[in-house]
Length: 555
Image 1: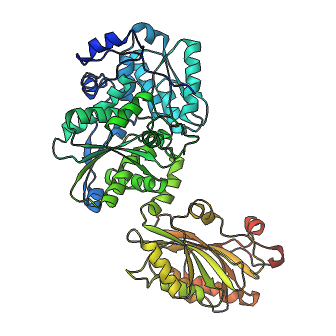
Image 2 (image 1 turned 180 degrees about the vertical axis):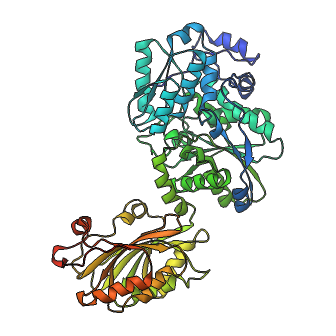
Image 3 (image 1 turned 90 degrees about the vertical axis):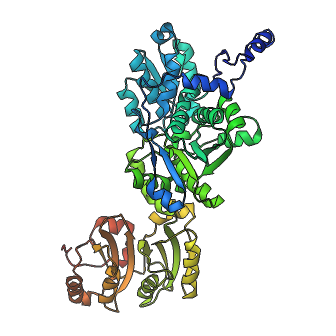
């Protein structure tokens, strides 16, 4: 694999100039820029023709919750919803008229691509953008909207990057690197310049997401030149930590694969220059996981009513983790919200995992005796848990054994570490429990697969109910049921509305059809009977259990 090396550049450090002239005869390698050199480049960066000075806002709710002041640098409010246009425009503004006439090319997961496309339109140049095939459609559409020509290639940034190098040579274009270029790094460094100007008071650390390292390099160069007492903490996903591994190994490490949830930071190999700068100037590196990022996206939404992309939430996730690990109070942290180009379809996954990521929801597999009244007894126990009653967020069950019932259940929690205590409490009351709160298989797949055919579910009737989301709704349902009717299926997942959609299977002897109709009338919950639905017959009903049923009723 090849990487684009920055072109030779002249150091602005006067003491370095004679040294450079002496070394030129020995080696073509440029003299590395110092933080002072980068400071001058950042102060003279040309970014504000396209970028704006983004706001620095306090996250009131999050600050209060973690007992530290959290400042949000709102790069999600830039014209391209990302900081990337700063570096892209600064690089392109330094190109010659001849280079601009031929056009530019870049490789990007999306945000840099938009910056290049917008900058090219502003400068009147052609822009060819190579993007991974995994790039969210919202970013592809945005690039095309700015006039960029899009080529989709490969599964990661590195795949797209190598293809862009080939096209660069074939078409005679100028490559605009997303991170490994001093002009790009200087453009990104203007973010730190604004933070220190907007907040001249105490500042303990600035948290910066890392993909290829352009943003953290620019931020670190400026901060360490102006306020070296302020820590710069780099943040990566735990499945895309190329910079962290490289710094540990003291050489650039190429990852075999990268996670794609945070596509904006999915880089297999960091830049040469960004590795050099980060190794020398970044105080600390951290990793965060997917659930923590989902929880951070929700935290940001609560405070700003804006939805950032996963990469944009890395810094906030790290602040929460850092404050909890170091047990800090009264400190001031800044998080750069580096992007907000979120694919709308991804919101379903984020919402599903946010509560677990914050440990405001706990998941369990509970074994209940398959006997009359045990389901009602378990539901009553939930309402009597220590620390107050918990809301049920999920409940999945399908009859599969004559002696035991295995239930997948989700409960709200009041803080971290509660899931183990709740599981222990269930066990004390005779319900064997497995804590699934941190089980990826359970969270990603099994919760959606509880069900299937049941040869035990004789005389089964299937109904879709609308339950009011209020305490006692389920207990009312259970209390009105006849003792002889058995629950053979139950599926519920809280969707955040003021009502819940529930699928219930009940074993009701044909002789009780009239009594069952009276039960539904007394219950008063809207319902649709689905016993004759072909989907039910295909995926849930064992042929031997099939029996004639009353005509589907609606209410």
